[in-house]
Image 1: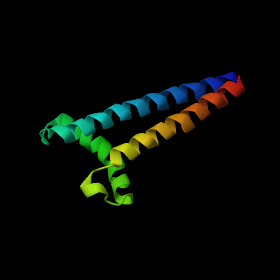
Image 2: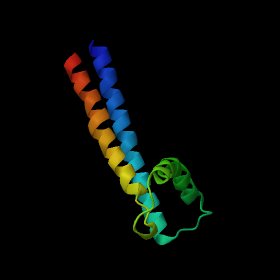
Image 3: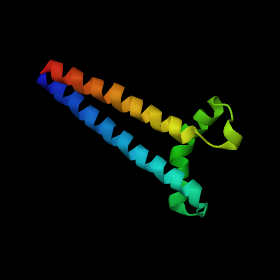
Image 4: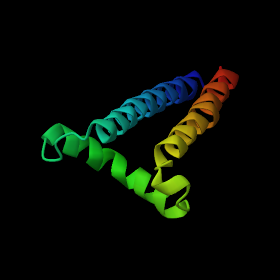
Length: 99
Protein backbone atom coordinates (compact mmCIF):
# COMPACT_ATOMS: atom_id res chain seq x y z
CA UNK A 1 0.00 0.00 0.00
CA UNK A 2 2.88 2.36 0.72
CA UNK A 3 4.00 2.10 -2.92
CA UNK A 4 0.63 3.42 -4.12
CA UNK A 5 0.76 6.14 -1.46
CA UNK A 6 4.20 7.21 -2.67
CA UNK A 7 2.96 7.16 -6.25
CA UNK A 8 0.07 9.44 -5.33
CA UNK A 9 2.38 11.79 -3.42
CA UNK A 10 4.70 11.97 -6.42
CA UNK A 11 1.78 12.60 -8.75
CA UNK A 12 0.53 15.37 -6.47
CA UNK A 13 3.97 17.00 -6.49
CA UNK A 14 4.25 16.84 -10.28
CA UNK A 15 0.74 18.24 -10.80
CA UNK A 16 1.49 21.00 -8.29
CA UNK A 17 4.71 21.92 -10.09
CA UNK A 18 2.98 21.93 -13.48
CA UNK A 19 0.25 24.22 -12.15
CA UNK A 20 2.86 26.56 -10.68
CA UNK A 21 4.75 26.60 -13.97
CA UNK A 22 1.55 27.40 -15.86
CA UNK A 23 0.86 30.27 -13.43
CA UNK A 24 4.23 31.80 -14.27
CA UNK A 25 3.62 31.36 -17.99
CA UNK A 26 0.24 33.06 -17.55
CA UNK A 27 1.88 35.95 -15.67
CA UNK A 28 4.36 36.30 -18.54
CA UNK A 29 1.44 36.38 -20.99
CA UNK A 30 -0.23 39.18 -19.04
CA UNK A 31 2.99 41.21 -18.93
CA UNK A 32 3.53 40.64 -22.65
CA UNK A 33 0.06 42.00 -23.37
CA UNK A 34 0.86 45.14 -21.36
CA UNK A 35 4.18 45.94 -23.02
CA UNK A 36 3.16 45.09 -26.58
CA UNK A 37 6.10 42.77 -27.28
CA UNK A 38 7.19 41.68 -30.74
CA UNK A 39 4.69 39.01 -31.87
CA UNK A 40 7.32 37.37 -34.10
CA UNK A 41 9.69 36.67 -31.20
CA UNK A 42 9.86 32.88 -30.68
CA UNK A 43 9.57 33.21 -26.89
CA UNK A 44 6.48 35.38 -27.19
CA UNK A 45 4.95 33.01 -29.73
CA UNK A 46 5.66 30.06 -27.44
CA UNK A 47 4.05 31.73 -24.44
CA UNK A 48 1.01 32.72 -26.50
CA UNK A 49 0.66 29.23 -27.99
CA UNK A 50 0.80 27.64 -24.52
CA UNK A 51 -1.74 29.97 -22.91
CA UNK A 52 -4.12 30.70 -25.77
CA UNK A 53 -6.08 27.39 -25.73
CA UNK A 54 -7.12 27.94 -22.10
CA UNK A 55 -7.73 31.66 -22.42
CA UNK A 56 -9.70 31.22 -25.65
CA UNK A 57 -12.12 28.77 -24.01
CA UNK A 58 -12.63 31.16 -21.10
CA UNK A 59 -13.14 34.15 -23.43
CA UNK A 60 -15.68 32.20 -25.45
CA UNK A 61 -17.69 31.37 -22.30
CA UNK A 62 -17.55 34.88 -20.76
CA UNK A 63 -19.56 37.83 -21.99
CA UNK A 64 -17.64 40.97 -22.91
CA UNK A 65 -17.76 43.33 -19.94
CA UNK A 66 -16.24 46.68 -18.93
CA UNK A 67 -15.37 48.05 -22.35
CA UNK A 68 -13.38 45.11 -23.69
CA UNK A 69 -11.14 44.39 -20.68
CA UNK A 70 -9.93 40.80 -20.82
CA UNK A 71 -10.79 39.01 -17.57
CA UNK A 72 -9.83 35.56 -18.86
CA UNK A 73 -6.40 35.46 -17.10
CA UNK A 74 -8.09 36.19 -13.77
CA UNK A 75 -10.54 33.34 -14.34
CA UNK A 76 -7.63 31.09 -15.35
CA UNK A 77 -5.79 31.97 -12.11
CA UNK A 78 -8.92 31.10 -10.14
CA UNK A 79 -9.13 27.77 -11.95
CA UNK A 80 -5.49 27.00 -11.22
CA UNK A 81 -5.97 27.94 -7.58
CA UNK A 82 -9.03 25.66 -7.40
CA UNK A 83 -7.06 22.78 -8.90
CA UNK A 84 -4.22 23.32 -6.44
CA UNK A 85 -6.61 23.22 -3.49
CA UNK A 86 -8.94 20.50 -4.75
CA UNK A 87 -6.87 18.12 -6.86
CA UNK A 88 -3.38 18.36 -5.40
CA UNK A 89 -4.49 18.49 -1.78
CA UNK A 90 -6.94 15.63 -2.36
CA UNK A 91 -4.15 13.47 -3.78
CA UNK A 92 -1.91 14.29 -0.82
CA UNK A 93 -4.69 13.53 1.68
CA UNK A 94 -5.52 10.25 -0.04
CA UNK A 95 -1.86 9.22 -0.02
CA UNK A 96 -1.51 10.05 3.66
CA UNK A 97 -4.50 7.90 4.54
CA UNK A 98 -2.97 4.96 2.68
CA UNK A 99 0.21 5.01 4.76
